[in-house]
Amino acid sequence: MRLFVRNALPLLQTGVRPALHDARTAPPRLRARRGVSIAEMVVVLVIAGIMLSIALPRFAGMRDRMSLRSAKQEVIAYIMASRAAAIRQSQPSQVHFLNNRVWGTINQPNGTNATVTQTLRTFRTRDVTLTLNGDPTANDSIVYDARGIATYPGRKSARVLTLNNLQETICVSRAGLITRSCTY
Image (tube, rainbow, N blue to C red; front, side):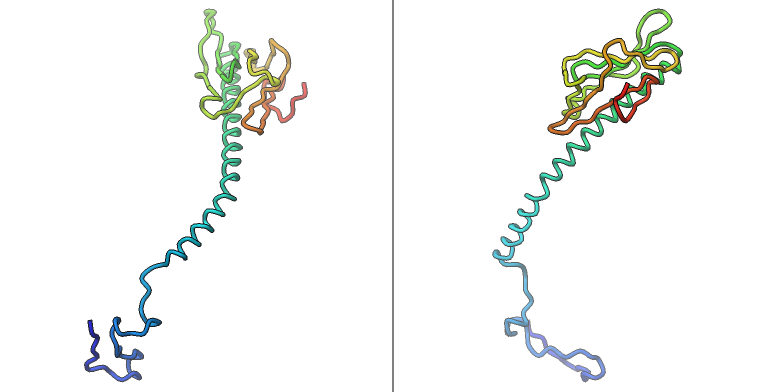
């Protein structure tokens, strides 16, 4: 493909120089580059690999922290839903903790128990272990009276959520509210 310049205006009028050669006969420095060399590609891939090896452990740790925080918020939501049901229906309600499962029930006036919340399986949904003072097999519950005041049929304790080396603690006050510290 030859480029010819016909009827070209002088350089002063257009500001563009006419092409006097074609792409095949142009010197190498004037030819357009069509891609990258393999050496350049290898360098880029090595740098990207090094950056990923530095960043991936941080992403895994962040994922674990978010999963633990989400599990804690879900357990707190189940506790608060049972408390709210006790206040709303003026009947005692319970939050049950057993083998990484949490569920809420409320006592009906006819003597039966109705389910307030469906069963939350913390280990199945988020790989989080729910323990009672470090004992994963402990069967415990929090009982709320009709006013939403928490009574503890068992020992006073903290619910501990664990994922890998991370831990979060849930404490319920005598008033039935979630507290920052586990002092009774």
